[in-house]
Structures are given as C-alpha cells and as structure tokens.
Image 1 (cartoon, rainbow, N blue to C red):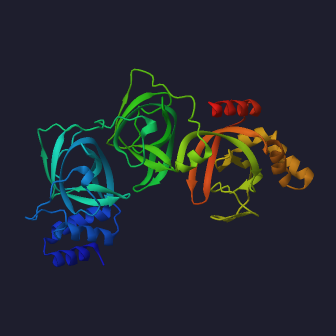
Image 2: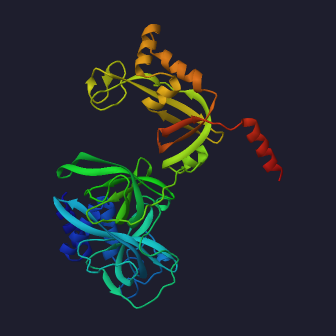
Image 3: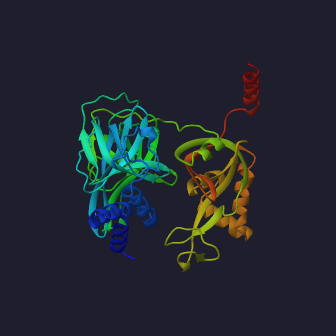
Length: 427
C-alpha cells in the first residue's frame, strides 16, 4: 500500500482533511518512523487523545509532564538550540530544524518540519500550541508542523540550562543538535565517497579541545578546516560513529577562524576497563591492565587487496578467491580485574612488540614452515605483563575492542602500587 493510500484510509477513518494527514504522515515516515507507529501517532493526534482539554484543544503541560503517550500538547519554553539539517525524501530535498527547549522542569528535543511557520532562535521564550509528541530513542520529542501555533512571548523562565548550544567535546552525545564548539583541527583528510547524489567530496579527521578529542565529518568542505587551525563551528550536530560521538559539519554550519590557539588535552581519560565498556564506546581513552592472552588471528596474517579484510585460505567473504597481502596484527586480551577488552595493534605496534618488521616475520615463518611462530613470539613477549593502552573503544554484540594508538609496558612497580593501595584503604 502506498503512502497516498495509507493517508486516504486514515483520513477517512478519522474524518479529517486528507492533505493534512498526508503531510503529517510524510513527515513522520521521512524521519524513519515505521508506518504503523506513524499512523498510530496520527490517530492519537486527530482522535482527541488524553492530552486534550474538554474543548478538544491540547492542554498546557510542563516539559517534565510530557510523555510518549501524549498526542498533542501546548508548552511554553526557552529555545536552547536550533540547528538545520537537509534530508532527502522522494527525490526531493527538505530542510528541517532540530534542537532543544527547556522550562523550569526540564528539557526536551524538537523537530520542526516543512510547514512550521515559526522561527526558533536560541534565547527566545516561545509558546507552542498544538505541538505533536512522538517517541524518539525512548524519550518524548515535540514535532512541530503546519498545525502547530508558535508565539514568541515576553516571559522569563528560570531555566537551569545554557542557551546557545556552546559545548566542550567531552560533553557531546549522539543526538545533540545546534551545537557550537571551539576546537583545534588535529587531523584532516579529503575523501571521495558514494553519496546520495553520486560521488561526494568530504573532509574527515579529528578535533581537539582541553577536554578531549573526537572525530568529525564535514559534508560540505569548509576552507577554514585544515590541520593546525583553531576554529569555531556553529550549528553542528552529533552522530554516533563506532560507538562514540562524532561532530558533523553541514552546509548550514558556520565555520570561523579564531584569533587564538585552542588548547588540546595531551592525555586521554584513564578509566577502568569496566567503566570504559559500560560507556558503550569512546573515541579516546586510556586503559591499563595485564595481557592474559593473544587471540587467534594475530601475528603474520593476510588481507584482501580489495577491501582489507583478513582472509583465510585465500578466501575473502566479500570478494571470493583473492591473492592475499601480508600484514602484521595483534589481538591481545587485556584484563584489569574489572573486565576484559580485546586490544588490536596495527602493523607498526605489532612490529614493535614482535621485534621485527613484516620481512622479518616472513623469514621467520619460512624458516619454521609455520606462520604461527610469529604469533607465538608475540605472546611470549607480552602475555603476563602489564600495559598502558590508549586508543578508540567500540562495543557491540561481539564484545569490546580497543584499536590502539599507543601500547606501552607499565613503568610503575606493582609492589609499590599495592603498598600505596593498602595505605589508602587503612585511612
């Protein structure tokens, strides 16, 4: 059944205008809401659900009182952030506004769709009548469309949130919108990808400030973004990338050069393995623990020349029979007593712990007529020793993996550390 048919059936059942229902339905589906959920949301909206007053108008609610069971509400709140994003639907480009609102009781995210007549500027106090409510990531979100009645009001609300979206990198979370950061560009490279309109040139790399580091993608390359530059990025949004936040710069983002150098934290936050794993993913973190095992798939391995995946017996899962290219890799299990994580060392870090480069490893394997001797030597050198590891942590259904950028044997004395611990415990 087409969206047109769904809209016609729904409008007929509810006794409301088909074109209005169709617009609302398109907006919800366009934002990845499943059709059944979208239709149920509109049934609540047009069916006189529990959030309406006796005259059929949406009741006024404090933000903390808005729930996913509401259909339409009226809220009075301060605009905290407002960011634009371009989306594509049915071959056409649409620009939506996203951000957060707050009152004395809490804050809530919003999406303003095509047809919304208001201009939401950070710092404004607005009354939004007949704002739709939907569930997004388990929380209620306001949906503002052509049936929403916006009004700027002369009212001061005592909110406990910063207006304008200014944030440090350490404070960012996936889903943040309308964000402003002041950062230094640490890494930057140009890439050509297959975008929705064909080949697209983007920038990607790493940003830093005095709280940490995060990856970024610039979908409309800005000249101001180059290695070493200190810049302000306004109206950016945050997505998840390999379990960690990633700053996204769009055609609506304003990028300006700063007349000062943004300081960047030299050290990554040191966490226990359990704390790091429970976070769900971190771009830059430092862990310490004992290597208790070197896993299969370590040492002298072969990769597919097309996609770079590790192959077995000349077979790539994506490209079938290929002539593999030799590489070095280590997959070590790190245990700090709270949990374990698989630490992945690239060819350079593996060469350092192995004590030789890839040519040495090939010769070693030929002499022994067994590739496994490379992994065995690595295990002999690192298993049972304590290491401090820095890198990017991802967590998924297959476990926790830390792609290491540094891997160094701990230089503190275990006996001294134990003595210090006992002294602290006695206090």
